[in-house]
Image (tube, rainbow, N blue to C red; front, side, top):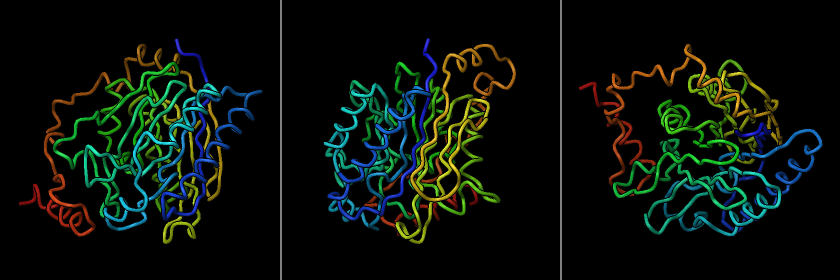
Length: 328
C-alpha cells in the first residue's frame, strides 16, 4: 500500500525563450525550486511529487514549424532530462517536467509539445499533447500522424501510485482524462499555460472549474501546475497562476493565489484512501456506472488529421471543415 505523501504544484515566470540556448537557465532555476521545495518542507511534509507548467522550457513562439525546428525543438532524452533524473535520484522524488518542444527523427517534419515524468530510475513516461491550442499552436498531435506507434495515453505505475498527465487544452476534452483513468490513473497531473480571462478568478474561472470537475467525475487526485507569467513575457497573454492540488471529491487541498510570479503549493496525497473509496463506493462512481457503449460521438471524428505541413492557415481550414460535419 502506497504511503501518504505530499505533492507540489510549481509555477514559474520566465520570458519566452527565443532559442534553445536559453533552456539551460530555465532548467537551473527549476532544479533550484525542486531542491528548495523538497528540502525546505522536509521538517513538515514529505514532498515526493513535483509538477511544472507547460512551456517551462520553451513556447511555440514562432508561427511556422520550420522556425520551431530550427530554433527551439530538441530531442528527448537530453541533457536537461538527465539533470532532472539526477536530482530525482538524489532527493528520492518524482518530477513531471514542464513541456519541451520536441523533435523525433521517427516523425520528420513534426514538432511535439512534450512532458516527461522522471523518477530515481529514469524517464517513466513521455506524453505528447493531444489537443494543441489551435489555430495558434502549430506543433503536431499524435492524431496527425498515421504511422504514430507510441502509447498516446501513458500511465506510469510508481511507488507513489499510478500517475498520468495531460497538457492544458487537453483538459477541455473530458474523454482525454477519462481514458487515462480507465487505464488506471490515480493521480492526474495537469501542466498548463492557461491564460486570462479563462483563469483562476470569476466570472470565467475555467482553470479552477475544470480541475475540480475532472477530479470529482473521475475520482482522481489532480495536481495542476499553471504558468504565472506576466504579460510582458508573453504578449498579449498573461497567465494567472492559481496552481493547485485537488482531491478525488473535487476539494481544493491547496491553491496559489491568482496572479503572476513564482509560487509553490503543497498538499497531501493519500492513494490508500483513494483506492479504498474507489472500491467501497456504490454511489457517485462514474467509472463503474459508465455506459460508454451508448456514446456514438466517440467514434465520430470531427477534426481530420493533418494532411500537409501544419500551419495556422491549414489549421483554420481544418477547423472550418470540422464545423461542417454533421450540419450538412
